[in-house]
Amino acid sequence: MPRPSNALLGLALAASTVGCGADPSTAPPAAAALSTALRPRQTPAYYVAQAELYFDTLDTRADPALVPNYSSRVARWEWPPWYLLTGYERMQMITGTRLALSFEPSTVPTRDCRAFPVQPFARCRVSFVYKRGPCPIFEEFTFNDQGEMTFIEAWSDQPGMRPTEDPNDAWAEAPTVRRLSTRVPGLGNANGLIEPGAEWMAAAAARDPELADFVRRTQSFYRSWAQAYSDAGPTAFPRGCGWSAAP
Image (cartoon, rainbow, N blue to C red; front, top):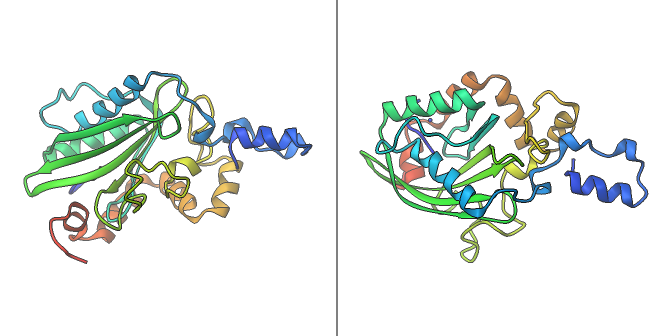
């Protein structure tokens, strides 16, 4: 979700290659598993409730003391026209979100959150309401085996900005959907911890420019966020929220 003014292969594949006679020493470590290696360990209602809690943190009507069960290294990635890596690590996520809400208050009265049997386990179509108007967003939530939220990914719910433009795939279930969460090594181990400096992260990033950009931004979060905000310019919100036809 946007906030104005402040906002390799997986473990399963590794196992299959070993089973086919590959040298186990060349298989990716379990720590490098992708999120799609995990299956739900919580109830569907749990994942929906956690997503709802997240949107409560961006709703002035809710109790600010209530936050989702964030992982210690939770990350939030918001695709253009938003600002890419807009949250990293638990305390920054909590304090940064509160600060953003104080700068530009919002409510999130329209929510449709659903649980899925494959990662991301929770996906939502919502509409934020700012003083300037409504802002529709599609957002997804990845979890580890402990039920901690490890990765948040958001898109403007406007034509040309969604994870898929297939009108028959409203919940981005097709294998062709473009998302980052299923390409970040480490989100599929039991703890779902992101390890930016790991060798297997570097190997995956060398093959994936968007993942490499994500890793780079984790190394200098505040500087990269400020640069992304500056680069996006004043048209980001009008475009992302559909308030104008600004290019």
